[in-house]
Length: 72
Image (cartoon, rainbow, N blue to C red; front, side, top):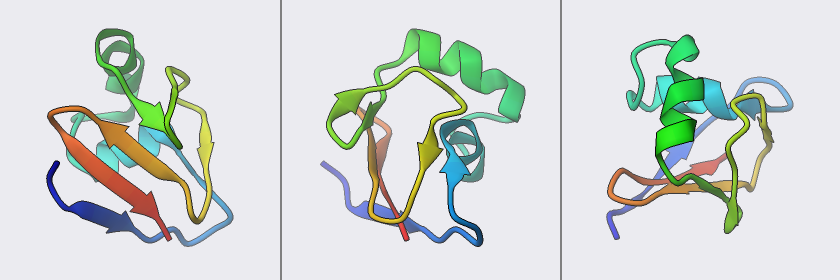
């Protein structure tokens, strides 16, 4: 697997949809619903399909064939 990228958050959390947009995987936040419907996304090794899922410091997101991100 490719290297783990780090995403720094300013508040207590970032949503999964915001992460997908910030990482450049989707063009807009509205595309998150469709991306999550069609692609496997793992948050802390658990399948996740809610764009509003709150990601906090220490969480890890893996999208097979796309990459891995750690929240800081």
